[in-house]
Amino acid sequence: MATRARPISPEFLVLKTLTLFVFWILLSGSFKWVHLGVGFVLSFLVAWINSGHSPFVPKFRLWFRIPLYIPWLLYKIFESGIYLSRLILHPKLPIDPHLVFMETKLDHHGAVVLLGNSITLTPGTITVEADRKNLIVHAMDKTISDDLAGKEIESKIADIFQDEEPDL
Image (cartoon, rainbow, N blue to C red; front, side, top):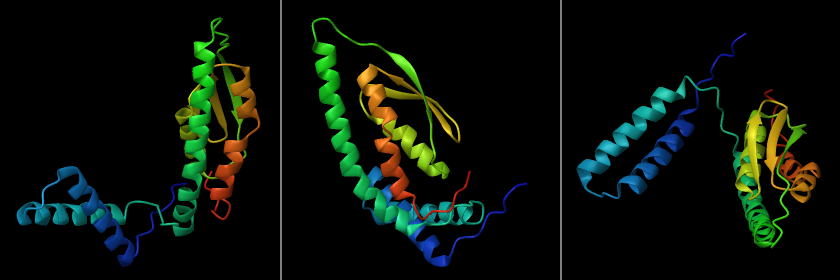
């Protein structure tokens, strides 16, 4: 059974238009009135066309939690980068690449996507395949796969999506 898309509020239409317009300005770098006018009109049209067709409803609590996650993820990326550099520069090159099968308890599709992308951004791991409840991850050695098995990233992401309704 297909879910019916909910139209967005006028306030969110304005927010979406302004966000697209700022993105337009950043990409174009032009501040001529004609260029700004075309950019604003196109931003509004894109936001309006998408307003009734998307089941996305803005979840502002979610967007306030993600910036708290980013510094932690950057730290993990840095930490993994140092570990992987030491592993690769070791004279014996003690890598042991293998696939790790992970089952996740995350109930939100966006949370699973964020988990897969966070794992891929971390040096030494790549999410090879993902579905609603399972991920297959390529890890460079046992230490990295043990770190994945600890599910620290998953628990941080679960904290971000704690009040969101499951959509799986």
